[in-house]
Image (cartoon, rainbow, N blue to C red; front, side, top):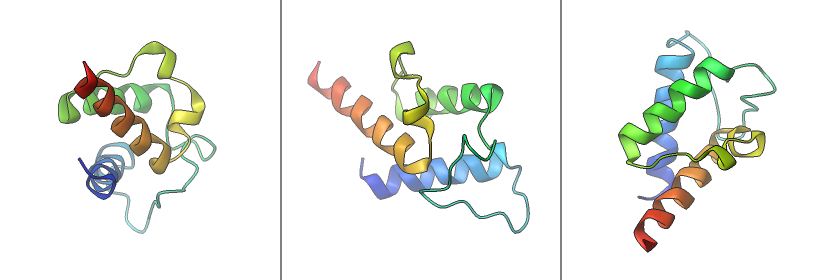
Length: 89
């Protein structure tokens, strides 16, 4: 998948499921999701489940670190890295 496609899918998920389509709330690729409290333990778990279902990759425990979930761009890079790891196997 391409970066823009993954980013768009993740943005839509965060908007719809985490922010509950809050009117007037816009998140950008560099919006600090952890710092602003948009992602917490429950919403991050929901996001990880979504990533597994939508992209067919599991996020291993060692990749469940703040720098990988800091913002949408970081999460997108994580998904693309995990997809590349799966293709190599």
